[in-house]
Length: 566
Image (cartoon, rainbow, N blue to C red; front, side, top):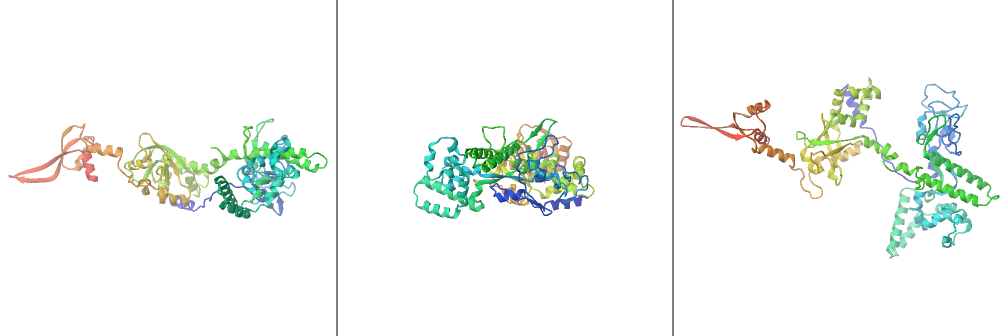
């Protein structure tokens, strides 16, 4: 059984890990593809056109609304809306109900299926309005704000004198005009012109501006970002499972703030569609007001508005301690970590570190659960958790085997230089502490007066290879700054050697021993201490006048043990 566990552990190491992720602007086609799917030759689009959430009398989602079951999936697994396909064995492929037309699949799809909102006028992405768009169009930010937020219509401002080349039609349809400029923008031609200007310019401020423009355009080329994507025609909608609407009682519901923002965007967008249809019968001012409101609402969705502190934006979910990255992605690394007080472990090998059994079980708990679950007699996570709680002997044997192949990273705060992060081979101990070899203290700048150290489990194979090659304790014997040896005796090692060698403070006892075995036997029976002074005979004697003379020296057990080690 134990051999099967070892084979299961070896198979876990062969799993491939994710390479990583990046944040970038998406094309309208990609946003539509995120919600588009084809089932049994039936194409389902994820376009949300109605600002409704649910029917509060029945509790069912509204069609084409923010919680539509056709777009995001069913509320109950393997059950369609009409209820004919109900309480049947779960089929491992999805299909469309021929009666109600709803999909019959697992309800977990509501946590990752996305929708989209089609906008009837292009809207600028606020992240790129201040950082990228001014360098592409060669216009100042305040002028772009003046155009895109239709300030000329609502506020009488003299800045219109600076834009004499732009016609009134372009003012009224400013977002469409900027989108037209971006669609006909050639990055390569722009780069060639700017580079020629760079060589002919002597002004430092202009050079800085040109260099930044060149860097931004090169980033667009490398990441395959088209400039027209800055103007949003389609807005993605988060999966319904990530912005829930929770039922409290017959009257009250609790909803995510994002639902209210999405609902406002759809209402303004539908109003804008109606005003565009009635453009010839009513003044254009109604349409311009809705365009401005739509731009401000989408800005509120992407970036948090300081004036409305209670509304959370998408960027607020990516910032701080409790964001999606740190909670669901980086949090996995935080889960494989621990912290405890360090104490001296002189009996350890210098490249090993002692970890308590309870800390090791919590640290390697997911790995232990996967190993135990693969056994045919356990087979479930619940039974595997029982083994972790009530079978310490099996766990110790598993941990000892895992420790032969694993390497663990240790950190002592504050991390001021690279020597504060090193890796060691783990060693199982019983106490609720971390045992550190005393000579390793100088690299961490630590001592044993209550200092704490963080312990982190290295997950991926690439990180393990890098740790064994670069930051293992064996490779950090010399300081990277001065190239001096930091593997030296200090602190309690010097104090211990002084205690073993020194006679000060201890009285002489009239004891005579013939060999080291008798001395150790007396020490084990508490007849002497480590620094008790006594006489011991050495292997030296001679004859003189028919008398045998033997040589004795005054020493202690500490001195004898130190001499034996040397």
